[in-house]
Figure 1 (tube, rainbow, N blue to C red):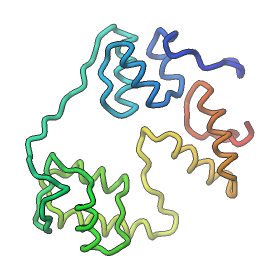
Figure 2 (figure 1 turned 90 degrees about the vertical axis):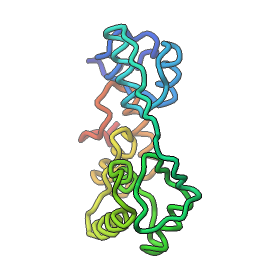
Figure 3 (figure 1 turned 90 degrees about the horizontal axis):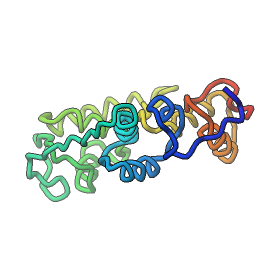
Figure 4 (figure 1 turned 120 degrees about the vertical axis):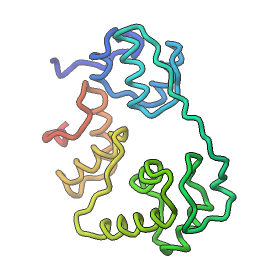
Length: 196
C-alpha cells in the first residue's frame, strides 16, 4: 500500500471491502445512501453496513422501524422512583430535573447512562438512579475512562493520542486526525501516528 494513496470519491468505490478501508463522515454516508436509494436512518456503522451490503450484493436493506408502543411523554409526565422506563424514553429537561433532585447537581447525561436507559426498558427510575450513582463513583476513581461509543472514532483517537503524548495541543490533535482519516483504515490510534 502506497503512503501517497488518496481517498477515492465515494461514488467510485465498487466493493464493500474497499469502502470500509476509508473514513466517512456521517453526512457523506447519508448523502450516498440517498444517491443509492437506501434508507438514511441510523448511526454511522448502520449506514456503512447498509452501503457495504448494497455494493457487495446489490440488495437494499431497509432500516428496521421500531414501533413505539408507549404514549408516556418523558418531557411532560410527573416522574417518580417507580416510573418504568418505556420504549418512548427520551432524554429531556424533565428527566434531567428529576435526576438532579435524586442525585444532586453532579448529574449529567453520559453515553453510558443513555445506553443503560435504552437497554433497560421495564426497569424503574429507582434502578436508573442506582446505576448513575454507581457509574458516578466509578468515574471518580483514578484512571477511569468513559466507554466511547463505537461510532465515535474521533474521540477514541483523541483519547489514545492524548495518553501516548501528554500535553499535545488540540490544534495538533485535529491536524493529526485530519491526516489519519484521509488515509485508508484502520481509523484508530496506532503508535507513530503522532509523527505524521
